[in-house]
Image (cartoon, rainbow, N blue to C red; front, top):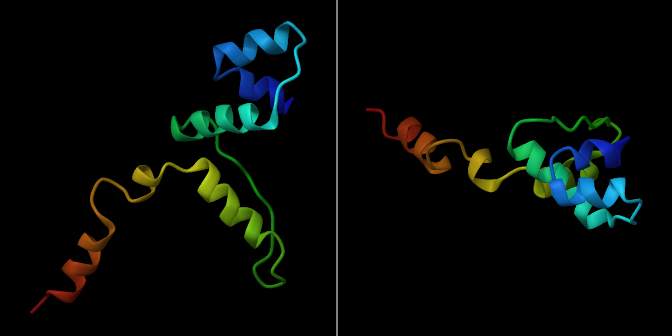
Length: 88
């Protein structure tokens, strides 16, 4: 099902899937990243910070699936800090 979902966001991947060709993990992850950035899917992860389970997987997924520009928002990340420290 994961390959089918990834293929929905990449036409070439879909063609290869329908033709029964082997699809590499890198291509699947690239299609999932594309869908995540386009806000078409939301990866769901489970873990426990208390027991340190899944924390590294979460960090790896953030690096792999989130666009660095969209993570910062519309402005630079230091702009928010500047407004907090320049009051007075």
